[in-house]
Figure (spheres, rainbow, N blue to C red):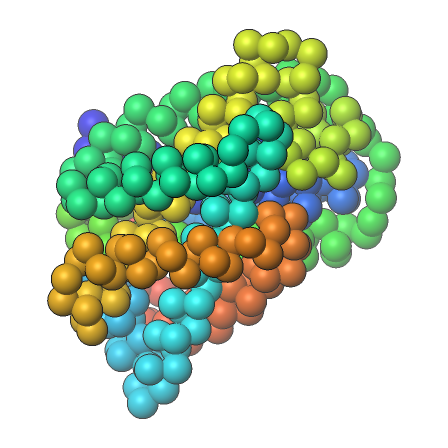
Length: 330
C-alpha cells in the first residue's frame, strides 16, 4: 500500500488536465503517426530513469531550494526563480484547463475557479496525508476512464520523421520532470531504495500505456485539433462524456495541489505563514492561467523543458554516486 500510495502521488502530480484531457498527448505524440511509438518508448525509459534519480536524490535533498544550493552554487537564487516560474507555469496551465473545462460544460467560469481554489486551499491546509488519500481514490478512477475512452483503432499514416517522434518524446519528459522531480524530492525520503525502483518502474509503465491507448484513439478519431480531445472521443456516450469531464477536472485538481504544495513550501522560507504562501501561489497561478490552455501547452511548457534539461544534466554529472547506482546497481 505504501508503494501504491507513492505511485498515485506521482501520477497525480503528473496526470494534469493536459494529460487526462489528451491535449498534451495530441500535441507531443499524435503528430507523428505510427512513429509516435518511438517517442513513447523513449519517454517511458526516461521517465523511469529520471523519476528514480530524483527519488534517490531525496535521501539528502528534500526541496528545490536545497537542490539549487547544492548544484548551482552562487547561481542558486537565479535557479530558484526559474524553478518557481516553471512550477507556476504548470499551476497556471491547470487553471487555464479549468477555464476550458468550464466553457465546455457551459457553466460559470467564476464558480468553477472559486470551487477549485477553495478545495485546493483546504486540501493543502490538511497536509500531505490528505494528498495521498485523494490521489489513491482519484488516480485509479482517471486511469479506468482513460482506458475505456481509448477503445478505438490506430491511424498508421506516417506524418513526420522518426527523429521528430523521438524528439517530441524527449521534450515531453523534460517539460514534466521539473515539477515531477521537485515533487519526488519532497516525498522520496519516506521510501527505501528498493521501493523507489518499483515505484519508478510502475509509474513509467502506466504513463507509457496511457500514451499508447489514448494516442491511438485521438489519431483514429481525428480529435487532435480540439482543446480537450478525450472529451470529444466520448461524445457519443453521455455517461462516458460526463465521466471524462469529471476525470479531466480530477487531473487538473491533483496536479494543481501537488505543484502548489511544492511552491508554497519554498515560499515559506520567506513567508512564515503557510496560509499566505498558499493563497499567493493560487492567485499568481490564476492570473497567469488567463493566457489560455492550448497556448500554455504549446509554448510556455517549452520553458520548463529547457530548464528540465539543464537541471538534470548538472545534477546528474555532479551526483556520480547516484548515477552509478542508477545504471549498475538498481
